[in-house]
Length: 362
Ligand code: SF4
Image 1 (cartoon, rainbow, N blue to C red):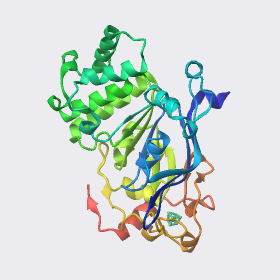
Image 2 (cartoon, rainbow, N blue to C red):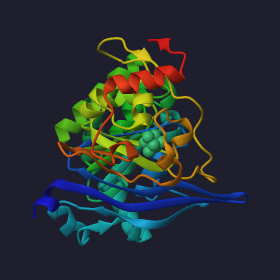
Image 3 (cartoon, rainbow, N blue to C red):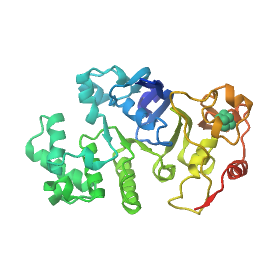
Image 4 (spheres, rainbow, N blue to C red):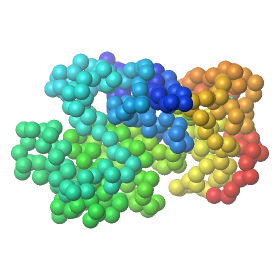
């Protein structure tokens, strides 16, 4: 079936909460989206919007007090993998047993965390850490084959073979991040989740790593979920972008559509809060106010206290993710401005935001 060949991941109505003594934190609320094979999806939003919780929820890496309270995360393995692992497709990741999950991670989905120094074991060489993954998940592989695979992986991420004996502290920040990417690629997973992998790097190294990630994903048809608070990074890297606010997905569209015509007022503000890595300079406007407390969300649209377009309905009725305009079926937005199928123009966005902000030249 068409859907089974193209769709890799289908997230349906996912809800994740943190139980806190002073109230329940609704970190991820009713999030649904699909990810195609080989697709690069950028997940953006301010700190605390739920993007990392969403990614860790998908991969079952959350620990108490986080709790998945509802939804499905359906994964469609390739036919030969489904046969090998005896998993019936689609696999609901949330239903996997502990032993199924151990096989599933690294083989199907691997994760790259924010700080490479924390992700790597400081007392093991880079080679030993790659070998560790291969030995655990490929017990039939001999030591010579594992060493050869480790060298191949290092080469793919631009690290020379002699570095196989280096310890993490002997490598630069950029090289450590490359080594972590090599480990993530070790078992040729279908999906890699990267949580702010370039945040601690300077802009030059950051750009090199982004180019490397893009090249490798294309070369191996690996799907990627790339999380960042910096929307401008995603514009070059991603096929599509999902923007989160207060635990909800409020816009999802192709990268180009988000760059040229962001539809949600928050997406517009986020896009104009960072200087562009390339292209013409644009006026930075920022977003007034701060993100809401996830224990006591505002009524209606959670963005309404900060939104320059807010009107009466926004305070009482929560908008749902829907097609922004009939002629743009791939652009989904959760905003009442589109309830009647009409959209504000780019100059409307600029005027409204600039009237709420002093403005800073990029
Ligand atoms: Fe602004 Fe209303 Fe749209 Fe929310 S629903 S983003 S408050 S216009």
